[in-house]
Image 1 (cartoon, rainbow over the protein chains, first blue to last red):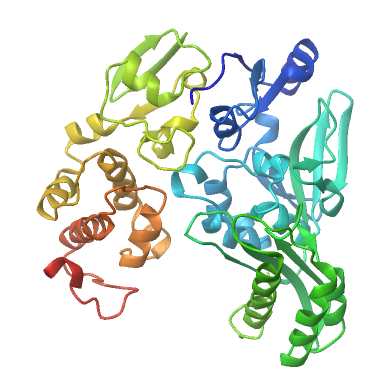
Image 2 (image 1 turned 45 degrees about the vertical axis):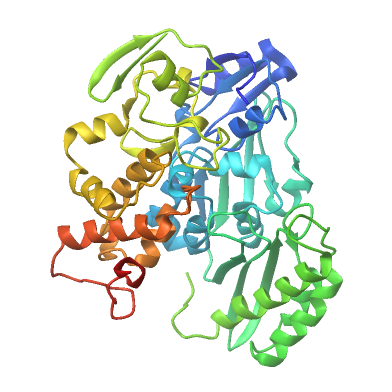
Length: 288
Length: 177
């Protein structure tokens, strides 16, 4: 279907954006890369009165290391994220996630801020930033807020963003950690039937601060508390991996969806648990 | 009112915000090589180059393109950049009904243009498939399309690192039938 009739205006600075939002109110919809939003317009799942384009706001761009964190501007496109040297050095989990996101033509347009704001429960980047214990930095006319990633995703397609507030960027603490992401999809580029983004430290062979975050199996990224606790302080080996798989039953309550029933998703999550944790046993994957 | 460059020519047009790039190209500029397929970003028939990178033309607002540089299949054909690829599509019968072909060529041209980036060497058959995975062929002619892209890569790089990343690169078995 063709998009609905609507207005379009481009904000080229944050003050410009706040005045546009003040003028148009709740019926205005912010657009950045548009790779999800424009598809929802074609389905008439949303009919904004006006699109406010933020893609040329310079304050929302760029990747840098400041104050002990890797800061990634909200307008960083997936393709840029995938080839950025700072991201590769400090958050290789994100570098590894990019090829799993849709297809090259979509990765050239979609932005990290857009993906996080849309909060699709099967998307890769929300799970990654929870696994990396990142902070979402928001901006509004009232100023900035800093929200831990684990508190940012509140429900199905819902976030802690207030009306009139946007994602300005993401800050990822600099840390030596092992990390990996894997997913199972019907076809390359599809949303995951189930996926796992994981980060942990290994100190004297023992697991420290593991964060196993599953996606495609709930209403948002699922930080698996029981499975993570089953690993904490133990040597990473077949025994502790089996314990994490077992404990996972307490963490996941997957809804049935087009891909299959809850039991199948639980099974896939256990399979991914062994694959991802097993990847840390190989000597090649050293800390970031 | 937007002013942009399309296939090297400067154009200025009034566009409605609800116009996507593909309708702008097809209906406003008469460039009908790019196809509107699913119109929600799934099929890849509308793939065009925008500021040097491929995009889904159905997921780009024409109104947002002031100052942009767009290349369609018409411009890509005229430049000769993919003449060998197009010849291989014909030789391998990779066009079939032809609907997906302009998008396939744009996407394959992107792989050809970016190959060997970051020292990855010549893309393997699996990497060709991965790169094309966002472009649907309703005739299911994927084997022939991958053959045509692979032939082009091999012809452009005759010795170097043939078949790197694959098993000893048997000459695409399905193509010899």
